[in-house]
Length: 294
Image (cartoon, rainbow, N blue to C red; front, side, top):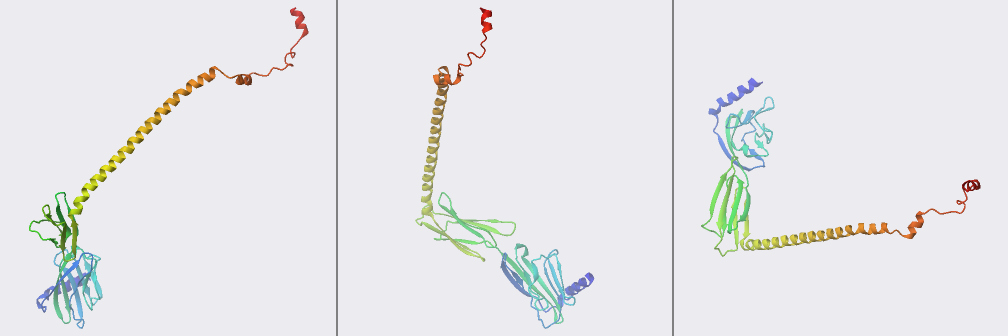
């Protein structure tokens, strides 16, 4: 079985020179979306072999043999599949597409009508994350992060004093920053325009509002700190006064106890003494003992 596949693929390469001429297609898809690479094919002709591959030795090879009704995958992700039935339309579907799918693809068809190639170029675009901030010196910073391709940044009102910088990341995305100063400008609001194939965004910043907000924040923060400090000192002094009263009260209690013990009341003394009964006086009386002593 494997030998048969190898023979068919080798035959396909030998017939490349006899193709009617390659066709080309370019496709741009946003990351996370569906990419469909078409391969024009006349369904009236009998399909023998349809193969998709990228232009590299270790890339995905996706093939279909009509005589066995069998699809083979080599180095292909599960995201790669047929869009429709390959015998009717051998279009390739990649979903969701990511940056690693970008590149050139070749569709090779062997049919009863002839042999031909179809080339597709897939470009994956990534929308940037856009922010607009300012610093203490009234310099506005518009940033478009991790976009592919790099976003275009412009300002309203337009100025010739803006500067830009770029950071290229290893995955092919680009972060672009644009700086513009408004120290001596009479405009209170600055607007940043970001243009990208995947998105267009407009952000505005009120410089006069943000400049006045900082003193209020500082005043509010100082008042809050003062209030917390005052409450803390009040609780400390109150606790110390409570401790002083407790110590004073504790030292007076022993003196009162000693005075109470040294001068017991008459009621307590009578409660402790046992009662004297008249019968107990004559209980051990003996007249003989009186005479003997006498």
